[in-house]
Length: 320
Image: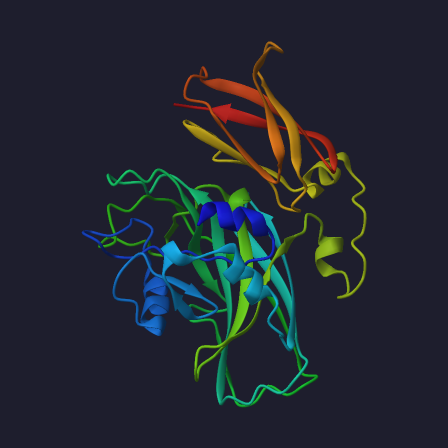
């Protein structure tokens, strides 16, 4: 499904819940993920649910997604988030406006916190990386329950900050899951993002979903809904505002680079501490690229890339 998903960067809210089987299950399995499994009655993996509808993963096509994106929706969702890597926290602000009446007797607002890429949970089946891995559910473990009708014109607003506790731990397997009260399984905090969806409790219909926009300043995070983004004023904010991410960092095998805004990456190069270009490639006009660092010497490198947003660079640590 990866080639299909790459065609719709920023358009799809994708969440992958690691499960407790086959065998001993995935180390990043959590009880919250199991709650979602129970909601859909999943009994085997892999299992794909597209807008709550069971879909054979091998049959997924771009045409299916195009049809989904043409569906009429009557709910507007705006979603922003900020990450504090020092505090290990993520703040989420959201605004939901109903454009029509939603008359089912119950609904849930779900804000999954997701890590774009994980690699430490690989086992022995040949899979070396996992995408859009679920880490935490907000506003609460089961989302927020709304009883009764949501009326046209009704506006719901959310402003939540969640702090991941303790240190990183890699569980032995799904029988030894992360205890969110004292530890976490986030490999790279800069690699987190938020998505959101509102769902009926009656027939599991997804009213609407949203992919969060990352903000790098309090001014932009707190600006009024509908106002234009405030242009960053510092060099750091300017560079961060371009949303260029390297992960995992430190890297040992394959390093991914991505622009959160969806800007196409053109040319990029990796430079060692002596100023020598040790890798150069063409980004092929996509918002994601990857390169192999297994033959790199341990140390610090600079990745310099050119995108539609300009030329930017980030530090990369290689550690085998």
